[in-house]
Image (cartoon, helix red, strand yellow):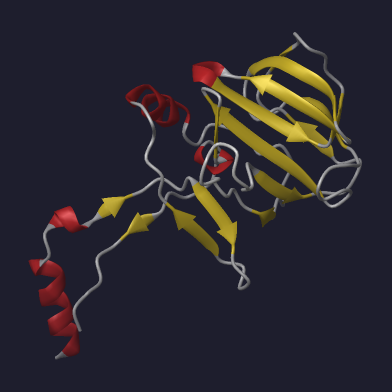
Length: 191
C-alpha cells in the first residue's frame, strides 16, 4: 500500500516541482557530505558565461583533491566569507592551470605567493600559495604545469586555495570544475 501511495503521489506532482540549481557554494559538513546553496547570477551575461564554461576547468591538483573548506559567499562585498576552495595539498605538489588563459599575476601578496590567470568570458582563477614556474603575460593551456604548492597563507603547508572571479565578483570554482555533479532538488513525497 505504501509503494502505491508513493507512486500515486509522484505521478500527481507536476513536473514544475522539479528544479535544477547551480552549486554556487559548497562546503563540507562534519559528516563529510557536501552542502549546496543557490545564488542567482547577477546578469544574463554572467549566466551565459557560467553555462558556456560549466564543467570545463581542470582541478589544479592531480587526484585525489579533497575539499577541506568550501566556498562561502560573503553577505556583502566586504563581509567575511571564504572566496574559494581549500584543497588538501602538501608543499611541493605540482599545480596545473585550470583552463586556457594568460597569466595576469605571479607574485607575493602579503605572506603568500599567488598566481592569477585570466580566462575567456571574464573569468579569472587565482591559486595560492603557489611557487609559479610561469610569468605575467605567459599563455597557458588547461592542465599545463604552472608551479608547485608553496608555504604561506591561511592553511600554510596543508592546502592549496583555488579562487574564481567572474567579471570581478567572486564565485564558487565548483561551477567550473570538471566532474562536479550538479545538484537537483526533488519534491518531498507525501507519505
